[in-house]
Image (cartoon, rainbow over all chains, first blue to last red; front, side, top):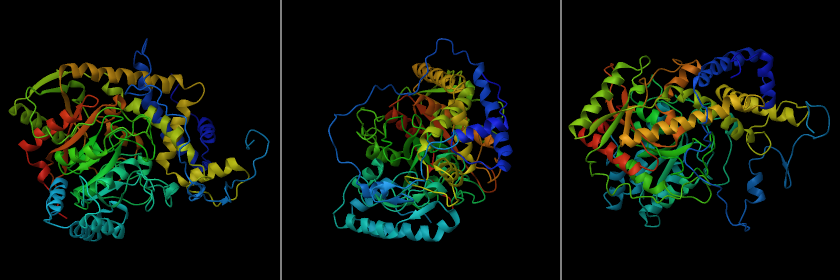
Length: 105
Length: 485
């Protein structure tokens, strides 16, 4: 298991992956609290899991599919009724253009 | 001052027999809410007009059903087309759901009068309701104490007699622990027993909706109404729903109570909790039950496994909150869409939610997935196997619900200290089995605080589990106590 010590840099990276704009002056606090939780969960490495299959769903179930028929869907009005910004049948977002890793596209 | 007819079943029968009208009952409850909720703050929103309209329809014979006319509250992470569904978060403070949760439809089809939506830890993440971004809910037994969480508002509403029952949700103990701290009954059904359609998702393999009630019969009645397969929830079980009330009063002969040594915590267990739970074991013995020693060897890894699995699933489920489709959008200038997401999410989510999203993102990220998430899922298998083996020896496992009594706000400000509240409850969600908390005593403090007993049963064993719980209830009178406000 990786070392539980998580750095400010790693937290900055994870925040970016999770799309959370954490200001610099809050990073240290987040890092400290996350680190203590990761330290706690480190004990999971004590367990012998050799030959054990992971369980993603405690109650066994297989693919649940329905018939491929058209059913009433949500109206456009309902879909957009909570949209902070919309235009006709569209959600409005800032321009999405190609660029470097840090921007969209 | 207690609610007329005392219980959900009592009130339902009184309306059905026309001993009271639903309007009268609803007015009584709404008056009580107006008087006491400014102190308790159990409710995020109430719907007096809508509730009275529905009550009038019940009285006019236009609405019927197993819950006809009785005022009920629901946790504010259950989608309703009426009012808002806030999850007690700034992210969804003004969100108006475009559909009703299946359980909401079921309650209303059964004639229930929904009086309001109750407060919770934001997005159901917490064990005290202190993480609500909207308000602080008080415990009716001692308003200096928290009501537990995350269904703290739902528990406080019932314990404060601001509703005859409520629905909450439980991912790691969020029904059972507040029920315990508020001296009421709280059931987490088997995973898949109740449809999750319309429950705002936190951790999809762990979440379940369930009742909080004054007594076990009330829970059985609600379970009759809300259980069953739902085509809109692909994880709901295709398993027949028994009538949970029909055999409820029949005690279980030859009941085997499993006591796991791993639950005898060497530290962190309040001695008064231990004493009350030990006394409950004696109650069961006096009723003819036998006590069996069982072992649940992976118990101590439950919290660690949970605080990997739940944040991982949460990081995925909460990715939908992007400031675009619904919910909070930043008013700050943004240079591109990524910044729109990042600022909206930073502003909309509280700190605990942000922490769990980050832990989950980290544990699922490339290079760490196997070491954290996949490993936790293997330990999940082991925890489930522990219970399977234990249930070969016993019918129910008995333990405390919460290691502590209701505490004061701020007592557990360190996130990890708060997580340790869940030691008795998390493995039930991890294994997908059923668990119920019932009142079993009070502390000896000047303002006595409730203590909860937990019974765990195999998947889909709610009928037997509730009968076992009812046996204890009939032999004691903890469930008849009401907080004085």
